[in-house]
Length: 280
Image (cartoon, rainbow, N blue to C red):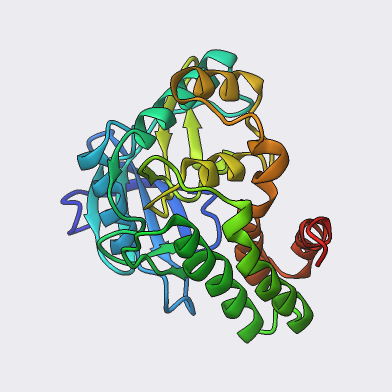
């Protein structure tokens, strides 16, 4: 008997859970299914209660489909199981995902950041409310994660110095959005669950209010989003014609630094290419 759930677990099967938790699908005595996440040992900074808070925030502030939170603590999170299909999504599902994301980005506030700090994976993500988008991205995303990865020994000092030389150039390279948009914050293909013809859920958020371009940039980094996705998003909100060529690589420095910190030197090469492109 699982006292917190109020009934027996009759079957447990492992699911892929990324880098911060052990994830299982549980079948309960009444025949329902839930997803259980348990924090892995040694990840003192990870907090599954914070993930629950972010999911609840998305459910409250937007119509983005997210799993229902059933139980939450620092070490354990139980979510309603979302049925989904495995494999490449249908074109109609990608279109639906784009429209859902565009609707999320229509949720705005005046300042960039959030009312509290969050996490991206197990890593701290500071969100002080900031009037300037470029200042927020430079200080609290690019330079903060660069310093974190340098301090851990994962980012070579020369890379950190090159990123510091890039930082003052961002005022001329990036532009502010019309408003600070609510972002999922960790939008790669593995964090979407698809049904047969629509998106079933967005999972594992790292939310804050920022520029929608930083979210779109991340979708280009590891694949999984095709032309139907971008065309549908552009139809609703538009995509600046120079975004993919001029700014996507700059915004992707942040998730690449996250991956350097988590997984090592294999993610240094694209950082190097972007810095070289800007003469650094």
